[in-house]
Image (cartoon, rainbow, N blue to C red):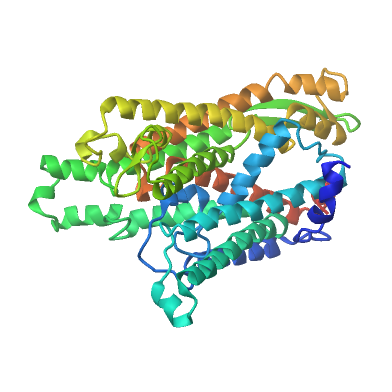
Length: 493
């Protein structure tokens, strides 16, 4: 008996959000999307009952804009389990170990979706458990345990249950948006998380421990700053250039916005013509960022899981070898393997004159760390982009079948899927690798220079790209709504 036959009774019965039976009006899609977004913000502001608020640490803080969620809330784990499950399935699918035909076999499609949900449930439990039971990240309130008579362990179990339910809720919220709303839930949550940080970085007078951008400059304009921080002194100029609310961060933020929008518009357009309808022509765009920036979530999530493992080992293994890593009082690696695998997330981690680098860290250590981060992001971005294209039906073979089924063909070539596939192989693989590597490079550059609100470079890239694609999808939905015949042509009825 194969593994599919053994697992089918479980995987086929996993809870699922039903797809709409027919066309969902655009306004209803917007309503569902807005409703889920409100629920998301609501859940990120609810602390689990029994949590010692204000204590513990948020290790995922440096990855928070990528993994969404909020520290110390019901959505503590964010979209991390969903992304981790996707990484596992992509690796297994890329190695052809699953034996599932998700393109043509409806039964295999159901098994794949069920397997993904099961993995998300398992990863949610494995992620939440060490956060709660080690006491380092989500400490239990002993007073609550005494009042309820269940002790500290009982409160920890209670917190774990709430965090686990929050992780499952975000899974189904993502599915609701994907089937009944506009775009995807994962993308929507990333936009919400990043936008919140950017707005706070611009306007808050206490954003992330420092004044927001406009608050800082308001103080300069009205003269409400200490003499030592005047922009006409060396210390004041450094403050306005390099502190969280500063010119360099604004420049980097605007630069990333511009370069992503420009890269989204760079494309190779392959001409198409209809095989039976004369004069009916079109173009198939192969964008520079063909795989989108979503594979970057997979790369950063992999790095986050590696660092999470290091945090667990350092807090629970008193005799952890020094070559694996030594940690500061703030819980960050300052030497060893986990230090070199920890991505640089801010200017203060490599600019000496900011005074944030520990004395034990040598310049050559930072150089190695930067080289590892660049290699990880560029090579990892290219590899995960290839996996993403192949598993989402965007590869040359799948694209050729789509063009064939739509009745289109490439002028000057025979109307044959193999012929179209060979033409697509001239562009798609190369553009996929180049685009994935470029996005990885941009993400590292943004982290090195810093952004408004201290959003990670990857998070900003994701937010801009997802917003751009969401705009395109909304425009397409509006076009379909105004011209119902187009829904029938594209099979969206």
